[in-house]
Amino acid sequence: NAGVMQNPRHLVRRRGQEARLRCSPMKGHSHVYWYRQLPEEGLKFMVYLQKENIIDESGMPKERFSAEFPKEGPSILRIQQVVRGDSAAYFCASSPARSSYEQYFGPGTRLTVT
Amino acid sequence: QKEVEQDPGPLSVPEGAIVSLNCTYSNSAFQYFMWYRQYSRKGPELLMYTYSSGNKEDGRFTAQVDKSSKYISLFIRDSQPSDSATYLCAMRDYTGTASKLTFGTGTRLQVTL
View 1 (cartoon, rainbow over the protein chains, first blue to last red):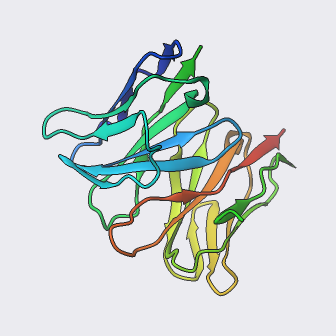
View 2 (view 1 turned 120 degrees about the vertical axis):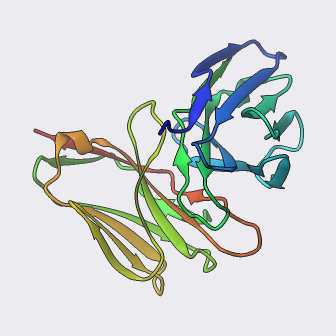
View 3 (view 1 turned 60 degrees about the horizontal axis):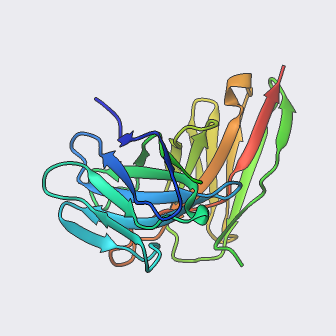
């Protein structure tokens, strides 16, 4: 059973460009969470999605960031007009049900903004 | 004040030692407690989770929760060099639709030969 998959693993963008990060949850999981990890900091929650619905986006910056989890295909975290401060590791986690406290993490996408 | 406090370390111990890792928290709504292990440049790996106060054991790992003190611990017995990693505590509440995890900053552990 494949784990959570994220791609790309490494992404370099110039300031002002767009970054698109993809996450495919574990088989049978329909709940996806995105977290950001800045250097020397713990993981910070960004957004929680189910298929075609955003459940909790309380951790998302108000501007430039958006997320979706379409009926078909992976979840996408989109960052428009990236700035240097967006450089971080972005992790996706999935769980089989909203009541499950077991969240399984992917390997992460490391975004570098130059 | 952060919701979850965790000493960043680094913590260096000799092989075979018992390791104690701890977190404190301030939010009484937290009901579920987890420990993740994260190797350098990898994703966090779920080690243990617990709900109630008390101890839970799994092999060389024991998770302990004291809700009255808002204090959780992870003990590693017979530590091995392969245990060298960052250990993250995480917790969540069970109110409304909230399923997000709140993490500590992580403790770096180095087990030396």
